[in-house]
Length: 391
Image (cartoon, rainbow, N blue to C red; front, side):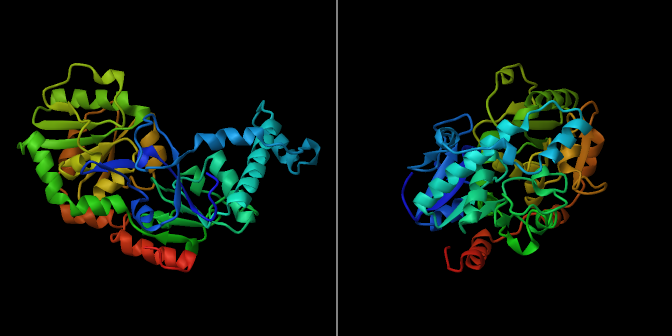
């Protein structure tokens, strides 16, 4: 934790995947293999045992340590409080902003002291927009330490963390963004990242999945065979898991010629119910293996909806609580390979239309979001950012 002149990587166990029994970080694996002095800082999502590092720092310690940081804080010295007071009045908000501002300042003071002590060469983050990492980024930038963000999910004009109309100076944003592809790059506000600060590097894990097509097909066939029924792989999400499951259970009961493979993020109590004979809950095969062997992929608003396109699979998004519309508005264009249906409708008509689209045209659409050749693109990007060959 106090090693000097290392490279910090902030990641989380949601990115962990298992390949031939070995745990890897699907976002930063190529970087991890080549940065020799990397120190992982890990946020554990539910499972403390799910980790791909022999040694790492639990991010929760950085949520506690700032609480013991002593500093002088004068609320009367704050500038711009009249703006906050105006917002409170305009929107009838009953909030006291001062404690939150004090917490932010406390975190910046902590990170300034800590980074000054360990002097990291650079810092990588897989998601910049939480209070811990934004305070860290702000402190790092004042000290000339480069902060580099890996894209970890869908970026769009609707995403609050990448949509701004004016620059903040100084700001808490990373110096660079390593993006999956050109379409994502073009959706990021220039007030957050200047275009030259966004480097397209593709996706390590998508490249890996594509290279293992025959292996994945064999594993899938051993478990499910290759029945003539149309396979729908459902990439579920925690926020809508129960309702998405219920939606596809109703669909499976009504359409026996389809086979639904429901892949949850985590095992939940509501999974222990009686299922239709053409509906399974998959907890062993990876979601990407299941998508790769499906006829159609479905989700709510997961990144899988665009990753599936890169694998040549058409996608149906089930809109629950308007989340698909809010998160995927930029991508839900009529007559494309990505369609949407409402939770209370039967999607059979849309599914039949999607099944007619050629795999080649789907892959062409997916490649706009995910560049190929991650290892080469990452090497080029880091040479431009760091000024030295790293991969």
